[in-house]
Image (cartoon, rainbow, N blue to C red; front, side, top):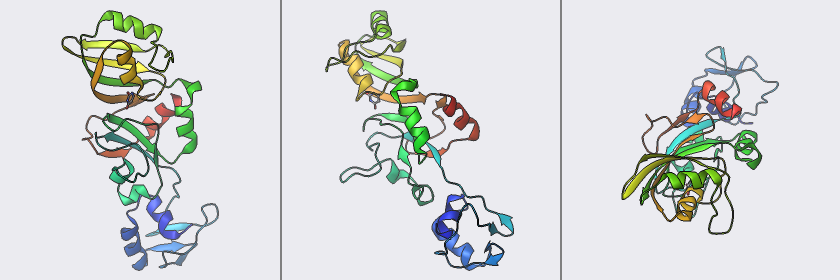
Length: 236
Ligand code: URA
């Protein structure tokens, strides 16, 4: 791997900032000052130091985003802006991908990582990782709907969902609810409400397994997941 990638991956700064540090002679590899960003280094055998402090190699990145509406949960797209387009270069070059999909018009918690194993385990249908959504729904959501969701409902393609837990926050011409499901079928929340004759007007994901959306994050903002949060996610 290139030395500048190692340094940028370790969180020291962007590739541009790293280049400056290299130029200044602040970086040594196995005790020798190296100014060449392209120098090859090996995570297992080489010792990289910055101002005489060891720089640990970091392979994985875990980001929590408050996804805004209007961007798609993909790494690239010909037409639309993607969630990866919202990342700084410093995080982009880890090649993170979104863990699962939120619809273009859905907001809220989206995890991005380059840790394929964690991503696979969170998405595996075997693991039933719970995901909780807040929704504003056209129509009067009732306890009968909650009972139907507890039994599972039949979607437009004939699929019968696993049980969902519906909490009615307010009910009227428009209702506000929280729904927890353990699957991730295409448009699942919207189609579950369709199955009981209602329409989702606004949808936001609040949590995925043990990871809760940090409400301090503005739409489109993201931050690294903490060690504690990562441990909770792994337990999910
Ligand atoms: N269910 C939906 O209908 N849309 C989403 O984005 C997520 C879950």
